[in-house]
Image 1 (cartoon, one colour):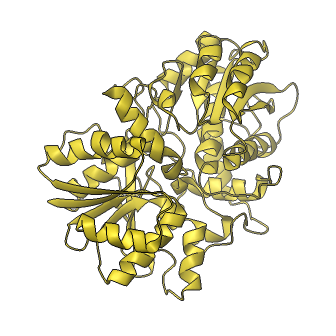
Image 2 (image 1 turned 180 degrees about the vertical axis):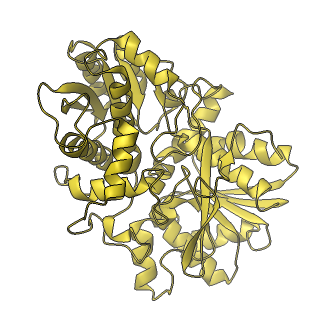
Length: 447
C-alpha cells in the first residue's frame, strides 16, 4: 500500500513542485502579481532591500560581505535537461551566499556538480559523490530517474538533503531528508482544505489518467474525503487532453454542482481547464496548485483579454507562502531579490524562477544555515552533518511550519504543513497559509 501511495505522488510531483511549489518562485516580472513577465524574464536592476539581507543574515547565521579563503564544497546532483530551474536556483543561492552573506564560516561555498539525465548517470554521479573526500554533504536538486541507484551509491557515506522530492524513493528513503512538504503533502492538504475550509460534502476531481495518477487520487486524496464522509467523483483524463476533452470531463465529474473541484495539472492543462470552465458557464470552487498561476497561464489570460492575471476565484496550494504575496519573514522577498539578481541561464535554458528554482534556492540557504551552526571546519564528516540535517526542526526558508522528519509512510519528508491562497476580484488573499498563521496541518487531528 505504501509503495502505491508513493507512486501516486510521483505522477503529480513534477506538476506540483515548483512549488508547489511554484509558490517559491516566479518570473521576476510577476513579483507584484501585476501580470507577469514572459517565461525566463527576470526583473531588471533589482534593488537590495536592507530587510532582505538582514533576514538572510539572521537565517543563515552568516556575516555581511563577500566570502574568502578555501571553499567549503557541497555536492549537487540534479536532472538538468528536465529541471534546469533547480540548478539555476541552487547556483543563484550559492552566488548570493558567497557575495553578500559571507559564505559559511567566512568561506565561499563551491558546488561540485553532476548531472543525471538518464538512469545510468545516477550510479555514476553517486559513485563520484561517495568517493570525493572533500564532500560531507550532497544536495539533490531533483531527479525523476535513477533515484534509488543514486541513494544506494551515496547513502551512509555522505549526508543528503533533497531539494525537490520527485520519485517514490525520495519520499521513503532513509538515506536523506527533504524539508518541503512535497507533492504528497500538497495533495493531501488540498483534500483537507476542501473538508476543513470549504466544508465540502461533494468533491469533483479531474486527475491524470495514468496508473500513478489514479493511485494518487485513490491513495492520497480519497481516504481523507472518505474519513469526512465526503462524496468524491474523480474523472481521469490524458495529460494531453484538449479543451473539449476537459469540458466533457468537467460535466462527467459533476463539477458544476459539486462543493469543490480538486485538480492538479501542468500549465498547459490549466489553460484548457480555464477555457472549458468558461465554455460551460459554471463557477466551481477550484482547488489546484500554483502551476495554474504560472507564466503560460498568465500569458493565455492576457491573450484572451481577461481582466484577471490568473483564473479568478480559484484556490492555489503552495508550501505555505505565495510569490504574489511576498513577505520578509518566510524569506520570500529575499528569494525574489537574490534570485532575480544572481540566477543565470543554464545552457540553452533561459532563467526561470518559478517552479523548482525556489525550493532549491531555499534548500541551499538552509544548508548554509546548518553548516554555519556546526562550523564549516567541523562539518566535514557524514555523522556530524547527517545528524544536524535530521535534527533541524525549522522553520525552513519558504516552507511553513515546524519540521518533523521520519514520519511514516513518507519518512524522508519533514514538512507537514501547506498553504492555500485565493485570487479573486483582482487580488490575492491568504486563506490558510503561513502569512495568517492558519496553514493546513497534515499532522493535526482531522476535523
